[in-house]
Structure formats: structure tokens, C-alpha cells
Length: 287
View (cartoon, rainbow, N blue to C red):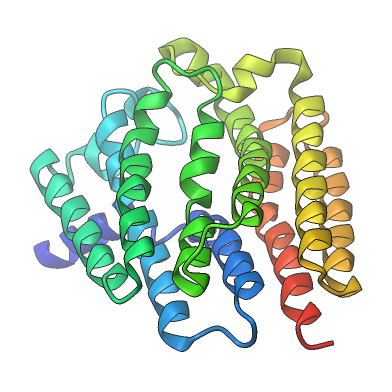
């Protein structure tokens, strides 16, 4: 493999394009909001901007995360081969890459209305500062939920020019969902995080971690149900939520024994939970 190809491969891994689960967990809430905010089929430009922007900002966020964690990742089994730890990518290269990805994402946002453009600044701030919350905030997953869900108010702003209550309730719902799935993820790294002093919801909840995850799933689904009632959607939407509830129950069977691999499988399986909610949102407009 040539030097150039090795470098591109390192960038590919640094931006986690080889692990699309994070992009999907970021994309699903945005798609829920786009379809709920749109009176009919979403505008193609708006949809394209948000899908491309999601990929770009998730990639930029991963680079920012690895920059912040580069002195810790070498001590964690799952992250010790990341490019910044192994030296395949320098700090300067990573900074330039994160800045470049963020700039392209911002150029895309400029195609939207000014309210969406204004909201892009706190969205960038959230993405850049999330890695730091693991140093002092007991439940950094809640902050992640805000960062991962900020496409919701941005979508409502871009499509309706307003920020209705439903947008903020959906954002709160996404916080609960993020705490649920990222606690499952944190249960995989709990022993390593305790050794190096990184905070996580899995550590904070302790022996109540499984109960906390299921409670967060319940809060997420109840808030999304409230949004559906408020927006007077069809019964298909609630069928999607019921399917998501069944998936959450399946996750309980994976995490109840707190074993690493099943917990990680539960985290990955949240893609299907997000897809189930989207299926309900999508089909409620056409059936």
C-alpha cells in the first residue's frame, strides 16, 4: 500500500466512516424532524443538506473527540489502535481535517434560511465541546444527546422558519434515547473508564444501570408519543413507537447480565430502533 493510500486509510478510520452506526444515530432524529415538519414530501435541497451535513459533522465530531481523548485512548482496549494514538495521523493533520469538514458543513448550511444558519453555531459548539464533558460531567451522554439531536430544531427552523414546542420536546426525547444507547456503549468500557478517570453514565448509575437504560427508553417513547398526539399524526406513527418499544425490551435481554459483547450489540441495534420510529413517521404521511 502506498504512503498516500495509508494516509487516506488513516483519515477514513479517524472520521469513523468505517463505523457508520454513529452517523445513523445522528441521522435518524434529523429525519424524524424533517418529515414531521414538512407538510408533504420534504424539499430535496433541505433533505440533501441535512443528510450530507450529518455525515460531515459526525466525521468532524469523531476527529474532535479523538483529539481530546488522544492521551486516554491508548489505555482503553477498544480505542488503543486509533490513528492519533498510533501516530498514523498527527495532531496538526487532525485539526486541519476537523476544520475542513466543519467548513464544508457550514457552506451547506448557508443554503438554508438564516434561522437554521444561526442554529448551526451552537450545533458546532456542542460537537466541539462534548469530548470535554467526560472530564467533569457525570452523565456526558446527556450532553451527547443534545449534540446528536440538534438537527431536530435546525430541521424545523429550515422548513417552517419557526422553533415550535414540539421541536424542543423531540430534542429532549433524543437526550433520553442517547443516554439509553450510549450507556449500553459505556457499559462496554466501564472498567477501563474507571481506571483512567473518565466519567460515564454507566459509572454514575452503577448497579442501577440496566434500570436507568430502560427508564430512558420509556421516557423517550412517551415524549415522542406526546409529539405525535400534539401534531395529530396517524396511528401508523404510534405503531412505529410500539415497534421501537419491543426493540427496547429486546435490548434488556442483551444488557441485563452486563456482558461486554451483548451490551455492544444492544448499542449497535439502536439503529433499528431509530429506523422503526422513522418508519412510523414516514408511513403516517402516506397511509
